[in-house]
Length: 59
Image (cartoon, rainbow, N blue to C red):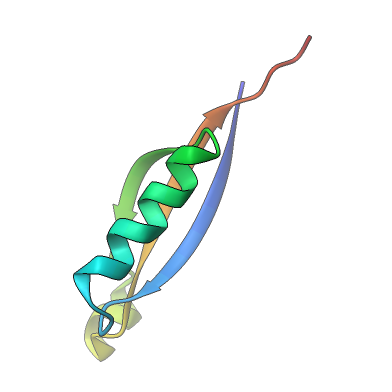
């Protein structure tokens, strides 16, 4: 079983910010699963949503 975390990232920020977000989540056991460009956000050009996943230990 997996759990998911959704993180909105401002696309007007520098690329370095994306790297930091992904790196910080990876250090906590998350893996980048998908990048979603929300239709309204795409029109405004303001953000994307990063979806992270990690396996849940059921033991």
